[in-house]
Amino acid sequence: MPDPHAVYSGRRRELGRLRLLSSGKVRDIYAVGEDRLLFVTSDRVSAFDVVMPQAIPHKGRVLTALAAHWFRRTADVVANHLVATEVDELPPACGISGALAAELAGRVMLVKRCTPTPVEWVVRGHIVGSGWKEYQRTGTVCGIPLPRGLEFCQRLPAPLLTPTSKDETHDLPLTPAEAEARVGSEIYARAASAALALFQRGREELARIGILLADTKFEFGTRNGDLLLIDEALTPDSSRFWPADRFATGRNQPSYDKQLLRDWLESLDWDKRPPAPDLPPEIVRRLSERYLEICEKITGRVPAGVTA
Image (cartoon, rainbow, N blue to C red):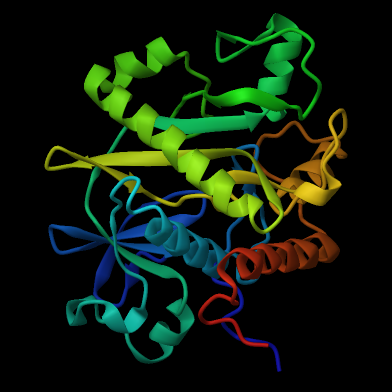
């Protein structure tokens, strides 16, 4: 019998006794009193900053499980906003119980309310994607000069911080100076150091299970003067994960992330603007399997709420 809760598209204006504050490409955010937020991670999937028409079964549960895993594994590197991930740990005032609780199982994070920085903190360990395109044109990535003669997907001499803007439509690359001007020198120094340390922790832990961390994106917020890691960390939506035993420079890499979706979209005559094309059932199925595979590979178990 199909799991009735395998897909959750979200964007509900009311959830129990909570009202929707905002809805992003994947997450819906609800206020829980004045000091907490409830993140509900849907199964929506985006590529090239466009949300696809079809959702991916269990994707939200995978992102929640992985984010919680990494928040706990990196708390000694930098503090984060996570409070709880179990529905039965939510305050009774949320009014989430019964069938709604079952539907949300594995999809929720209760977090501390923070002020997000207006910058996304991208760290690159290999040269690929938009960084590769810029390097081919100018020999730089986000204005940062790199050695000549690098090959596609080659490991960089050292991890490279390449911030981007945090915009409603398309994130745009920023030079380090531009990012610093947006957040101030003190926050920039702290966030840059934290992002590079988090990347190193993720790279080391993933290497132990045969995964290369090609690049990833972190988000930070401030709360009472403290810098906190927020949103998610080291998930297939925010990272490129490559099987180490199949890696070779100069070609596209097999991956554990949503590169499958990007590659399929690149094969179409689509201008990367809404509306996005419908996803074939085979792409939806393969994406769901890939998300579940990487979750189990990293955490050692299937996400909460997923049934056989």
